[in-house]
Amino acid sequence: MQLQSKVNRNNKKKIFNDPVYGFISIPREIIFDVIEHPYFQRLRRIKQLGLTHLVYPGALHTRFHHVLGAMHLMTKAVATIRRKGHDITTEEEEAVLLAILLHDIGHGPFSHALEHDIVSGVSHEEISCFFIERLSKEFGGRLDLALSVFKNEHPKKFLYQLVSSQLDMDRMDYLNRDSFYTGVSEGKIGSDRIIEMLNVVNGELVIEEKGIYSIEKFIVARRIMYWQVYLHKTVVAGEFMLIHILRRAKQLIQEGKDLFGSPALLFFMKQNISSQDFKNNPEVLEQFARLDDYDILGAIKVWQYCDDQVLSELSRRIVDRELFKIEVAKEAFSEEKITAISSQVMNQLEITESQVEHFVYAERLTNNAYSDDKQNINLLMKSGEIMELSKAADNLNISALTKPVAKYFLSYPTFR
Image 1 (spheres, rainbow, N blue to C red):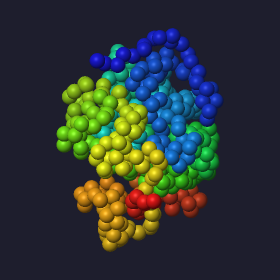
Image 2 (cartoon, rainbow, N blue to C red; image 1 turned 30 degrees about the vertical axis):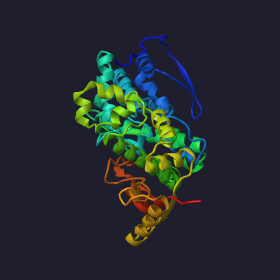
Image 3 (cartoon, rainbow, N blue to C red; image 1 turned 90 degrees about the vertical axis):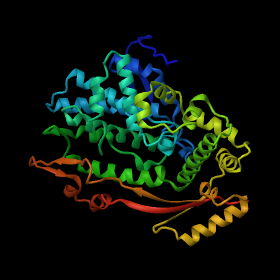
């Protein structure tokens, strides 16, 4: 049975009271209808920052919050670019607003942490495409132009860059929003100032030279937020525990063990769903649309009492916030240390060598605040010259921030 949309129910311009920006208005009826759709309402049940609330208790905001905020910033960006003499038709404005509104609709439960464990090798961007295609069919093709913007197939490349680039409305919103809800003030950026400095040259998005210091602060804020929030070592420890809970449960279910789970969760646990499955079987997207954080949390609460020691121990520790210890270093940990800790865990828990991989994690973290080999942030100099940010900035920090910083971690349980 397919989810039914609530099209045209009490359809009029609405406003949301957003804690970050104040009142956000819904500028088009089609946007209101899309927001009302069950596919979109699912984003209320997916937290923006996964398990980050285990470190920052206020970080309980959702993807729903975020995409509305990103759409609000997009309305400002469109107005700025139009005011500077660049043509954006009414249809293109609607398309870019829908594209940013739906850019995260393909996120599954706990977003990035479980992105490649619920499905096999299918990114959330790809699933977002499947959702937009399905919604466009329901709305009589009204989202086809939005899909072309989202897939970077529209001739006006700057529209795509507003949705997905190193200076898009997505990043602009999540830095301010995540800063607000975590209380990490270093992440706050001057989004209004940056948007006011946007311009278009030769169909590409640029920033006017006088906005350079706002951009430098934006890059620095992103670097800080990654180490202090997104890659906070305790958050990383919790997320890896969550990943291994799901992997262990999936392994047991596929071996024939009867484990508790919602119908949608068991649908994905019993089989390895690929991109091709989404394309060939409409039921796959419908099942994914029923999956959210509650499916995972509800299962974990039950799994802590199951008779598989690996799954029960991991699940109990997540529920009770008994997170693994984590060590972080600039160099990779030695095999000798990893082996010694693994042996201790095996002895303490009385588990096998094949099971200890679910308890001892040795991985690498990378923080790249700005990549000058990707879609660059380009500055429009007063002379009319276009210059890439790291070459134009007089702040040496920016050149340094173009280099990825790697850290290594080793995470394992401690025992009382």
